[in-house]
Length: 219
Image (cartoon, rainbow, N blue to C red):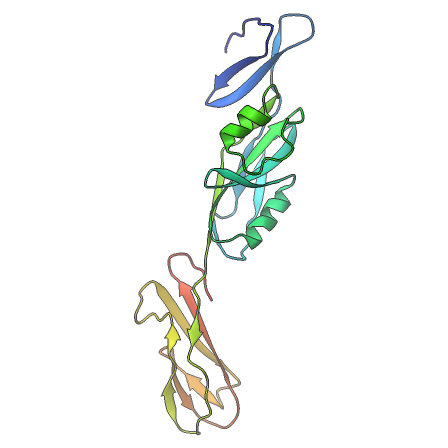
């Protein structure tokens, strides 16, 4: 419990480091808590690869909601729906991003939160506004490795040659690699060291997949 004393101005109380604004009701001296609730943000993952997907949900909310995406402490985008936040992550550049739910019962004085810090939003956009802000949901977007192999060539049946891939697991323990060939084993075979054996005439395509063992991202 806490005691709010009458004042001609709006009252502010701090509870668990969240700003809960109290306002005078009618002509009497009673006050009521702000009924905006930002709730809790949850996601199915805390990291994705570039162009990956994330499923974000919000629980325990009330009031009008906006979702602000922060990078390095500054809002780079604000959205009305979580589906828009999920779309943002599908095209986001590599880096760490934190999402906050902003809940309010009155229209903020700022039309756009972009470029604001959280402190600026509270001071400049939510002054005299009933609001609540969630804890952040932070998600890292990881860049995939860039895989490449030596160019193909025309070779004779029965010959064997090596393909070089980059980056290679033999020289970098941070990566795993997988070689495969399409066009049928009647044309070529290839092992996981990139050694190709030509067993018949025709054209075959070699695929080289590199997996970043730290993030699981591949190319």
